[in-house]
Amino acid sequence: MLPAVNSAGFRILGANERIRLGFIGVANRGQQLMDAFSEHKDCQIVALADVDKEILEKAAGRVGGKVDRYEDFRRLIDRQDIDAVVIATPDHWHAIQTIMACKAGKDVYVEKPLSITVVEGRKMVDAARKYNRVVQVGTQRRSSPLYMQLVQLVQEGKIGKVTVSRAYRLSNMAPTGIGHAPPTEPPPHVNWDLWLGPRPARPFQATIHPYKFRWWDLYSSQMANWGIHYLDAIRWVNGDLAPSAVCAMGGRYAVDDDRTIPDTLEAVFEFPAGRLAIFGQYEASGNPIFPVAGAELELRGTIGTAYIGYRTIHVVPERGGQFQDPSPRMEPIKIEGPAGDPTVLHARNFLDCVRSRQKPNADVEEGHRSTTCSLIANISLMLRARLDWDPVNERFTNMPEANNLLHYEYRKPWSLDEI
Image (cartoon, rainbow, N blue to C red):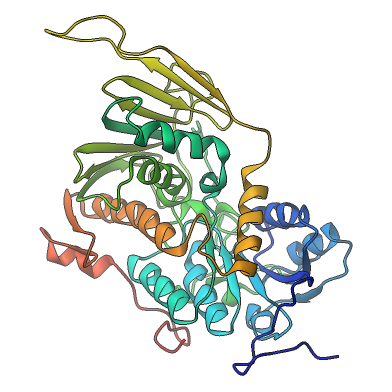
């Protein structure tokens, strides 16, 4: 029996029906997301798509092999019996796949970073709104009960005014990093042309696929891969829309490999409310930055400093400094978060919103704003310049030529304009 569809040809989801999911990109993160969604019995994984047949078969095995498999994601998106797609492809594919899925009447869970250019991100928001689609971005801290408590703590002024927030990606990859590999013909199980998609044609290289694309600026960056998690949390917790300026510095200082991104980078963002956010990518040293074990984020307030881990919040009291009363300004605070995987909770929120049609915790607009932070930092690094940012018009104001880097020309036949 064919599924019930509305006048636009989109499947009508019955109150007691399971949400039918298709997964696009089922390597490392894609398989983790398959596990997270499988925790929820009101959804069903019915189809997978990946350009790598070996990865595709391995992923199918995680769900007992009872799924349809596609090399070309467009065949999955075209199916009328799929309600939503989960996208975990390399970053340069997110925009095309999300917009196509929205146009085809599918809701979308798309991994972070949302896009690889600022222009792509805004078009993704526009598509979600035009086609009335639920689009959740994979910044799972937005569904963490611990981070929800942190938002309340900070926005109620319990640690005073936050003037500096800091987070880091720490991994000592010296001396050989991702290694070196020569350009070769692609393995027979990989559709390399489809992997490249809108990016320029080039030979296959084993230090790009699988997964190592994260260290190539044409396909990703660690500023975006890791930075968006923390920059999203910083924006959310502090109630900031967007930075007004960014300055990033870094380079390849100690790691000898095929990467095209820095092994050491620090980006500083200034926000109109009067605070800085700092993200450091340290891949030539891995020792902890913060004094509290397990902390991944620091919020420095005038009354207390909060150190946030994946499960715990520690607030260390501030003391008055020069010319001030040196007494502690508050009592120490320790908050233990409830058990539960935030990715599983994030999947739950998405599924609930597919049914309710409400905006999800990490709505595409929020994902776009946070991804933009990382992308404009990469542009600052490339131009070796401090850049002023207009978040309303999404343009640089002090260096007009920097606006040429907000998007790039796609390799034919791929185009956002035709979607």
